[in-house]
Length: 70
Image 1 (tube, rainbow, N blue to C red):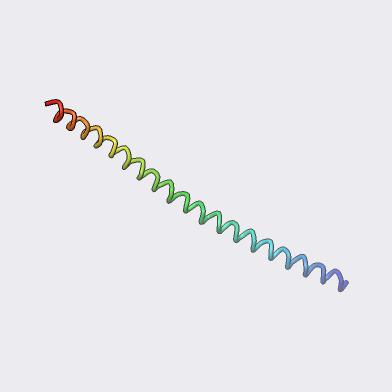
Image 2 (image 1 turned 180 degrees about the vertical axis):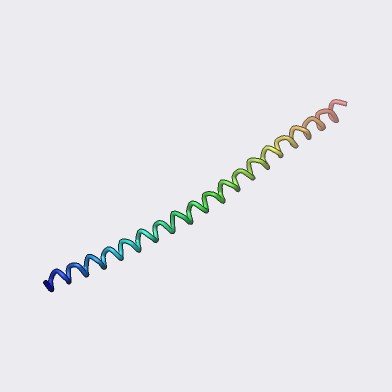
């Protein structure tokens, strides 16, 4: 009976340890998801800015073209 109690206590300890590892992993996954969301938002902003700069560049090239051809 005593050996069973000892074995059970060891199993419980192992379960607690595994649960803690699982919780740590879940927490890390949550943090990484947040980080990915932030990076995706930054990427969207950068893509928008890039598109705006392309448009400005086209306009500048037109103006320079008109100035050099006149």
